Every structure is written in C-alpha cells, then in structure tokens.
Length: 119
Length: 260
Image 1 (spheres, chains in turn purple, orange):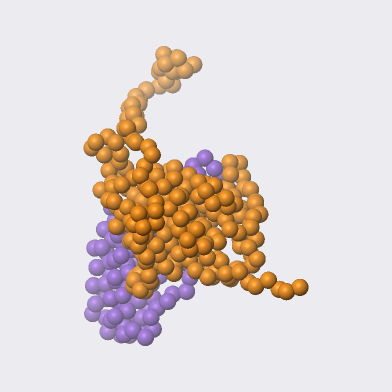
Image 2: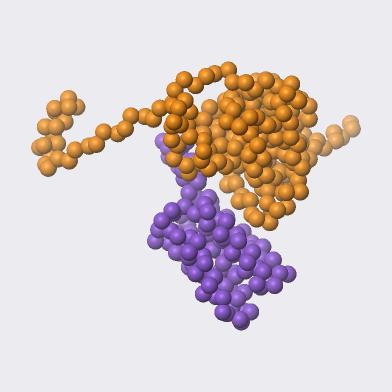
C-alpha cells in the first residue's frame, strides 16, 4: 500500500481487488456546481484533510502530499484545467475512502471471521 | 374486507462509543482494565446497524417512520450519536453515565427496554458485539427482556410491508434463513452492508437534529455493575524461535522436543 500514490487513478487490476468497494468508486460525484471554483477547492481540501486522519498507511505523509498537490495548482487560472483538477480531486477522495473502508473491513474480518473461506 | 393500514416502522439503533479498532490495546496501570485514554469511535458493527436502518428507509419495501440513535455512556457519547445522525438517523437519545463508569450489557439492555416501552419502537437494529469488550450479549438479553424475536448475526435483512421479516444469519458452517414478524431485534454481522462515511456537509446538517438527554435516575434505572473485574493481563509474550542450519538439525531438534 505504501507504493500507492493517490495522485493517479488506480489501475483496473487493483480496482477489481476491492470487490464490493467498487460501488464506492462508482457513486456519482456530488460536486457543488454553484460554488465558485476557489470555494470548491477549499471544500475539497477540507474533506481530503479530514479523510487523511484515517489514512491506513502511517508511513505515508498524507498531509504533506495533499498540501503539495494543491500548491502545484495554485497558479493555474484556466477554468477548464481547474475543473479537471477538481474532478481528479473528487476521484482521489473516493479512492481514499475506499482504502479506509477496506482496511477496516479486513481488520474486522481477520478478527471475527478468521477461519472462514469465501461465502 | 377492510385493507390493513400500512404500518409505519419505528427503528431504534443503539450505538456504542467504543475504543477505535485501530488502537493497540494496553493494560491499564492498575491492572484492572485497559487504558481508555485512547481514540474512541462508533463500534463498527453499530455503524453497520445505522447503515442498515437507513437503507431500509431508502429501499421503501416498508415505510420507515423514524430512525432514532441511542447511546448509553459518558458525555462524549454524544459524538457517537452525532455520527449516527450525520449518516442519516433522524433523532438521538443519550442516557448519561459517569465518566469511566462500567456499563454492563444487562444494564444497557434494561435501559433500552425502558426506552422501547416508553416510546414504542418496532425494530431494533444493533451491532452483534462491541469490539472493546466483545461480550455480544446485549442483543440477546434485550430480546429476552422484551419477549421479542431476534435475528442475530444478520448478513441480510428484508422487512416487508405488514411486518414480515426475513433474516439471513451467519452461523458456523454456513447461512441460516429465518422468518419472523415485527417487533424484532436484529444484530448485525460484518457482511450485512458497507457503512457510508459521514461527510462534512452531512455532519453540519446533523447539528440541527435533536438529541434528548436523560439521567438514569430520571428513567428509574439502576446501571450499577454486578461484576467486579479483579485483574486484566496481557497474554504471555511469544518465545523467540531458533534458526537451524539443516534439515537433520531440524529433525533432531524436533525429536528433542518430543514432537516426533
């Protein structure tokens, strides 16, 4: 998991291994279309920052990478580019959510259903 | 024949503020418990219960009137109720207990029975066990006290209009399907559903939802523990293994140990 950088979309092979959690990735994005782009970016940053607290890999410096990713796009002015980056951000948010849910699921399965085969 | 009026189902979801699943449990300094000065969050099986209640309402195969989240615990248990409200519950009930007080399953079951008798619920969906004490008894005790049917370790739940319930249970060696009628207690197992994450906007919206607070005395409840924990200790540390150089050495060491 430490080799995953959530700044690029997951490969389809890895996506299939999430099985039921693919549903999390396929849920429609509720991007607030009415908000100005700057406020959308702030909202996205806050949500990602909050998710970062539960990020499964403790060695992965989530907050630093989050900051860098947003700083890289700070100077961009083209609204089309910005919209694409925000969509990418929303996608990453869903992936991080899937990683968090999966870690919890696997822990619970190991703890409470360790000796069972697939049903 | 007069058609029966559609029932409105009132769902109660008890949630527990338990030690977070990712925390490494340590024995407390007095040796009579575990260190509780750590991160707490909603019991994962209770998250699954909240999610199932919300999905029942969304599915509309039965008309859900109200989903109430309830927690019996210290002041901080309000955060757990707020998480349930952020996921989609309509209102909350908090029965306050002193900080660091032990609340045993029987006490929880008695408190829930009182609330259910007062406020009339049809369906209680709760986690099968809490991950910090793993007693797994509250659901069964509550069903016994109320005289209601129970579907424990549910991996699938269907509630039809008219109160008929189909529960698929996870048991040793497979799955069991049972049919019952409301009112009923259902305890959730891991594969029932994947709980939603309470997003920031939903948390903000949840601040407007009402949480009623009660003290146990207000309800005529005595929640004092019946058991005293005498000691808690870690399992013995694993002895280090030794490396061998060859298969012959391995065989001789096994013979020494009396294994072969």
